[in-house]
Length: 332
Length: 307
Image 1 (tube, chains in turn cyan, brown):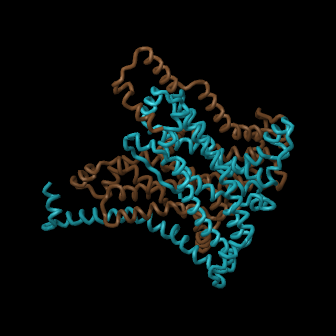
Image 2 (cartoon, chains in turn orange, red):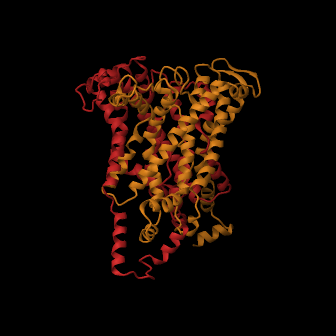
Image 3 (cartoon, chains in turn orange, yellow):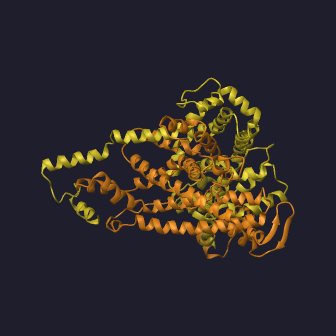
């Protein structure tokens, strides 16, 4: 105890005590510095430098060319292929995000009961998550093979003409969205399940005793109570959905999003600018435009999901405070 | 809607202001039990989801064990054939899966260990140590999590080529060494798990700052370190865009090798070989999943992980 008091008083410290104090003062900075130094070099610097690259003619091989100001942005925004990629991205995003969230909510609600072998069922819905997007794309490209494969087989048995999944715009978007949905639905279901399990059971009990049916309890209790998690899932699905690359890239490995760009997404467009065309300036400008689109659509989604999920019921239920960890970023 | 709940709360059985007659009570109990005991509909839905989750994987295994022309059979085949091993051998002859697997184990393992170590260190400092600028710096960490990777991918590629790292594993490993998400994840965990008194006590006992970290923080952080490591390992294993840009065909990762295998036959690839290769690429994570599936689920259920 006396050591501590002496330490705080400041006077009459031995060298050892001074050393110990310095140790405790400097350590936090030493502990956080590896992260900040590496992040500055490998994360922050490239992002800031992208601005610079985007303002020049910049060739992959020849390097920096003339300064052209916002020229790359103008060229990109007036390029019909960019807007084609934008439309495709939005279409695939909607086809994946909406069914995925609906299905994830249903799965979560089903899992949020006293079911037998709950670990088994949870693991089974998470199983697709371990398949890498590349593997998912390879498998589903064969499942949607228009000259064979199970889907064509089933359609044929039903007497329906084969659908040209790889060639037509809308069917190709459905096929790509299916890949995304298959991998992510179970994952999102588990996040929503966590939120559902935090809802106090006696609220349901009271509602049930009061005559509220299953559906009524779901709409009036479950949905409003998981609102923050719902918003989190929507935002992360937006960020992920707008950055889709692997699935459309591999759906037709020979091109960058189909022979007629029928499923070229924005990141694929960026990739095409940067590598086959070696135009780093255009690619860097596209990266910034994509970033702004993500922020805009993220904010829009936030506003929409607030409105849809908000109900005055929330104010009338007292919920015990609980720890919620909700980061909104990816792993990197 | 709100009125339902307001009326329900005081009349709930535990607070017992209104005592219903036995008949009423039995009816209500039946209803409550109906809610608690899931019926055939629940298990039917779960089985449907289960089939949906398993079918694509099963089907690709079935196709991978047959000959390519079986993909055209109507109705679709669902029973494995005898050719799985020979298809796998063909796949290994077409692309260097052995090298890809070794490379990816090195990449994912190094990234996971590095991220877990630096995240625990920084997360501990942010959660439990007091220092000037702590809140501002933590805010900076959180802000960086919102920035998409693609934004910096062009200059990062230029940096990697400048350092002559293209086609080396370093090109994939170095940008993954730290993660803002990891720092945030460890901070959130450690903030509740370690009591401040424990750190104070260690200091009073004369432990060095590092000793306190190593002997107090790390043992408490172990469960979170395991979950974080698992997720970072999986994310690195399944990453495609960045390895595609910096690794050549001679030095592939599992994902770039699989993509190369998929593109190997032009427009008429040997589907059975490609799907056999796909199964090979999934098996390592499948084994990991069977051993650590519960931890993965716990990590996701804590709401903290988004790949």
